[in-house]
Length: 211
Image (spheres, rainbow, N blue to C red):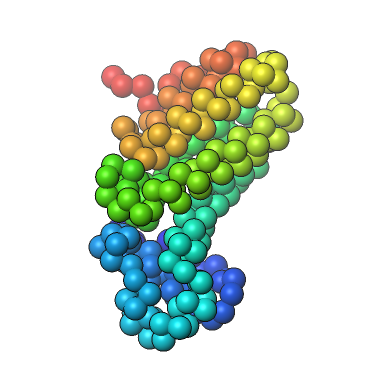
């Protein structure tokens, strides 16, 4: 299983030339040894730069954590946007694709699993940052989805659409933190429920119904 986020290892970095390798090293340490093991000295040794360079690139350990978490949460929003763009005429299919894509991304994301473990008592230093970022993610995800859902003109009031989006987003995030089934099965169930709430003309049966 890959420790480093693929997007992080290929995306252009903001800041100086050492910002990306420092973030990469921090992700690896967090995933393999925990957030407490991440120090500016360790990062400097791994990347082969001075401790001052690490501080110049990230500013502080808090800023480092914010950069790591923000990077991963933005990837979540990006896969949702892409899913809706792939299904401009079918809202239920867009929901299924978005949920499955998010859960598959989380399933292979060791950093997010390390962050999730912090919510169960480990590495509590990350908790305040994670709480702040999660709140921001909820707001951004719901705002983005409201704009994405509107063109489909679902047969619901604005208040009902808001409620549906809130339920779907919170349910997906709960499965990101504590999966109970495969991404495909979970996405199937959530899309089926959404179809029922949307009163879709032809509600699809569960794709992966247990036999």
